[in-house]
Length: 331
Image (tube, rainbow, N blue to C red; front, side, top):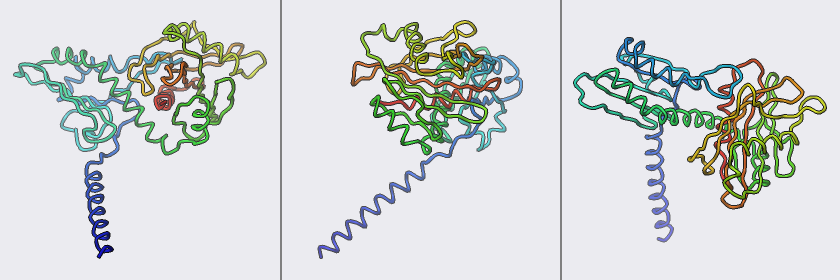
């Protein structure tokens, strides 16, 4: 009798788990579509796309991305009219839908994460005329871009997470007490004095990830000018150039580094640095981005950085790949 009771419980539990699994499968979203760094703007007609609404969207999202040696836009804006918004386009990763309703008394903003796919952010803005629509869009555009940037990182991490290299991840954890998802292909080139350089070499380009740690004394340690001086000191010491006496530094002539606080960085409040690295004594340069954050479990600040060498080629999307790795940092 006891065996039958155990069997009955097991069957009941299996039914519960099967139901949960079926429910989860029912709500699983399709993978989002769209090119890397692409925004899809949906209008009611071509006049809206060619007029003030389209201009406002293009002028904002197609601004040049700072810190790249060749001009490249933050995003590329694609366009369709609403009558072409079929199932495939509804799954676009970064979606803006514009609508003019002449008798609408007040603008309406509707947005949703993972509306028809994942990762996805879709926003619909309705207004009585184009001028009102543009004003509403301009009040929301920074937040919209923040969502789109997050989607781009999430998309890359979908590919990187299954390819995570346990050796590199464990090496970072052993030294710095933090985790960061490093995909296969990287190897530890330098690991000393709380500084680590991971490299990935391809036929025509090079990727670098660096992690370093310093004592944290006060908020002055997060000052931008101080951060760049510390960066130069460690790269000079540990990242040599191809010839004797050459070493990595930062460019302060063509592209000055810029600093921005990131309150919602996964590892905590962070300072982002973007700029151009160069090799002193050689004609080598490329973009870099770094994040500096205070380790909450120690009086230390940790900096993670990604940089690229890919001369005379587009680098925006490659830099986004490195950003997605850096944003996986957690203590």
